[in-house]
Length: 165
Image 1 (cartoon, one colour):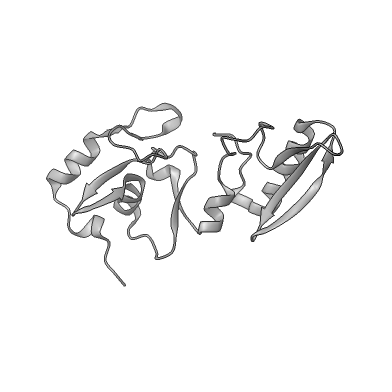
Image 2 (cartoon, helix red, strand yellow; image 1 turned 30 degrees about the vertical axis):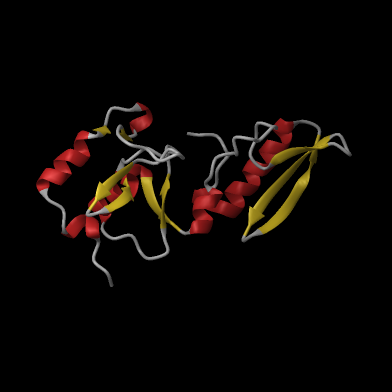
């Protein structure tokens, strides 16, 4: 098994530089990265000749190596958060389940869209790459409630209403 680059080969000087770029007084208990962020909002820093995501570095410093093929999920849904208490190991599928609603979502709710043919709101959920129809509803709020109930039942700890916590 490969040793973690983060925990085995970095100097105290590098660690001091890393933590100097973290605001531990951000809202909701987040520790926010204050330096360079990627186009999609993740903190990033050069480490040993490689641009690494800072939440992964923070996780490794707190808990050790990230298993191969696994991702780090932000429980708080804040991509720039480095608080180890807000980070957890996730499979790619689990990480996708915990995703917020898309920015181009016109209903305002994750998993909900207007079925124009029926004039009703349709709720859908994905499980193991398969889409499940949860029903048609007279309001987006009712459809969203159905989605949230199904998400808790089917996605467990990785359920997301689509709204940041």
